[in-house]
Image 1: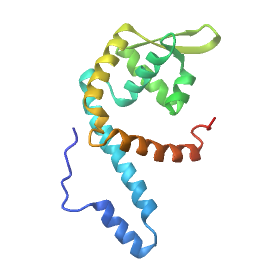
Image 2: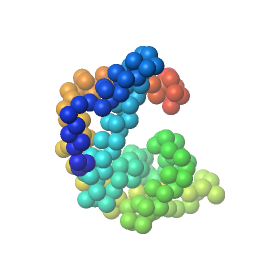
Image 3: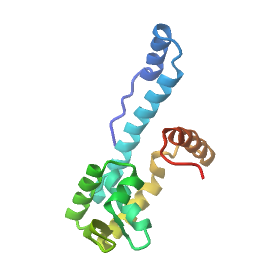
Length: 169
C-alpha cells in the first residue's frame, strides 16, 4: 500500500482557497483535483492487492472482461472499446497476460485479419483469487455505505455521459 502523506492540512483545500482568492470560483478545480488524487490512491491500493497475483488493475480488468464474455474470448478491438483504452494499451496488456500464460491469442474465425484474446484456465483461476482479495478489501472503498457508493457512481456517471462514454438508451 502507498505510504500515507500524513500532512497537517488538506493541500487541495488550501489550493482551493488560494484559487478562490486569485481566480474566482474554486469548486470545480477542487473537485477535479480531489478526483485525480483519489484515482492515484485507489490505483496504488488495488495494484498492491493484485501484485501477489502477478497482476496490475489493467490486467485484472482484461481478465474479468474476458471471463464475462460468452466463450471467454473477445477481439482485441472490443477489449479496447469495453475497457475504454487505446489499442496500444490493449496490446501491451494482452502481451503481458500472454507471457504469464493467463491469456492466449488465436485467429478470429469471423475476421481473417483479426485476433482474439482468450482467457486460459490459469487466467480464470488467478482472476477468481484476485477477485476474492479485491472483494474482501471492498475495492478500497470500505469507508462508504452502499448508498454513498451508489450516489458517487451516479455523480460520476453523469460526467461520463456528458463526455460521450455512452448513450442513455
